[in-house]
Length: 126
Image (tube, rainbow, N blue to C red; front, side, top):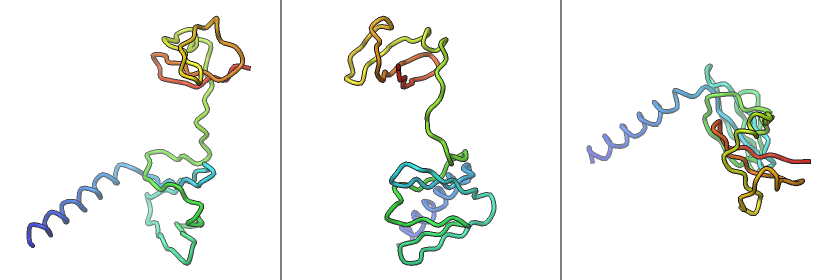
């Protein structure tokens, strides 16, 4: 019994230590919207019926899809970034949405996945 209690204590201590590196608690709703709340100060979480209240923010539990710690404020982030022409010129691989490898000359209107040294991007060609 003592071993189990010791193990559980160590597990909780480890989880607490891992969360200390993150300064935001981020909530993602089923429609993809995100709200980040700073955990630098004392934050209170409470549930009343189907509503989760965190600080001054309130969420309907049925609309939440994720809740996680993050290092940055993710409120309003879309994941869309501008791809510069230099990135396209440095493309090592280009794929269409069917997974077929294509060349720059074969690119027409549509969405492509482009791999470069800087990372992997989605590109919408209009």
